[in-house]
Length: 279
Length: 288
Image (cartoon, rainbow over all chains, first blue to last red; front, side, top):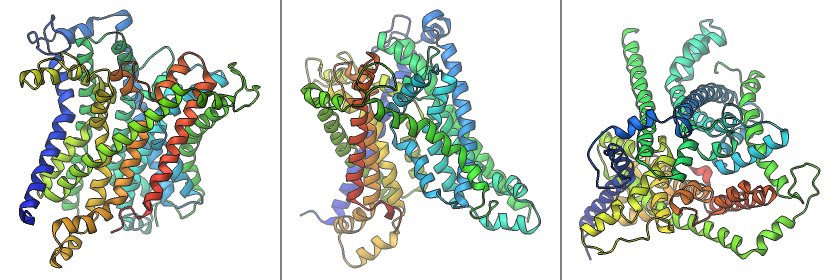
């Protein structure tokens, strides 16, 4: 029988190895793809790399006609921005409403949460059937937008609920006592304080929409979004251009995350220094 | 008191748009699938007579029933793997890592892929799995095998390898959350009373993290059941789960039959969630 102190140490080593091993396992494919996207013009889709170049990125920019990824990229960006804005506004409104504990707020909560639970495949398929019945032509800026919000809204909503849970109500009460109207108190006191949450909600709206595949698959008409184009090309033939495209879109997602984190830190610093200078 | 009065009519105006959006773009479409699954003919018309013939046709075909079985089996396998892996990672992060900065850093590196494209991450697995892929090159280099292994790409093993890398995060997250809510004093008290660490784990920590485990299991179950992209990309059209079947039938225009499979998918997901929720009272989540 091993003494329990030694066993404790063994457990820590095993779990630590497991964690680091999993992190490597999770990241290696993406990093490998990024590395292989810089292979030379004769390079293939696996190792060994043949030289180092930006050839496949230039190829990506050069290609016209069928494989041109620029219009889909633009569509996906516009769609992601629209989802980001809509998610932020609807999340704040919905979470504010929840604070007032209106009749039926319990049902409302689960209705929104249903958006996370319902798989994209079913939502997309159902939307395709309904648009067909109504005789609507599906397109990325109508039907796709509608089902993307179903997916992004719950994440923004939960973020805002968490933020309002930790919110100090006395600050609002102080403003109201001092004669501010409810709208002014919301605009000048509440909104600035929950701004980090709003940015979180907007970030969810952007990245979840930008990368969404299953929901778009059924609901986007002839003008396709980026993930659909990527999938179509992948289905035809795997080429290093796809690695370049994959690396570029991953970079867009990471930039969005990094930008949000930086903004959050900036706001926190301003709140802290603001509190210090205004006694 | 908030900027909104308790039970004020304004709250309906604020909740309205979100509620209508969810009803119109989520509830109505899924309800419509159920209706279409009962249509008697392939023609797309609301005047269709209603029948359960489509369902009997599904269960009469052994191949389709096998796909249903395969899908549930894959979900169960994934729940087991990601459950153990996710718990180990969460426990290490919250109990063994003492420095908050290091803990946050590790957690951040773990979560970031959630914000990148699952499709791209799937494609990124291809150069790993092929006959000339990274795994085979490594195995050949280490003289573990002397012939490249073909079993990775276009196989269930390859699909599982990729799915583990996508979905483990879903089990880790809720467990991290429940572990964080356990007051350290609880474990310390048990240790003062001379309980061994193993006993503390089995009698205190594990029961208190049960809600987190169940939520993680539900999330993995739902995602794997409905996952068609991983199977399509890595299985290379050789493997079909229920989701792939829906797409296949949708693209060949057999809408009522595609709807039947979608409904069965929905039903098995609901049943799974109900069973999992029976296992533990989820409302206790977060209560110490």
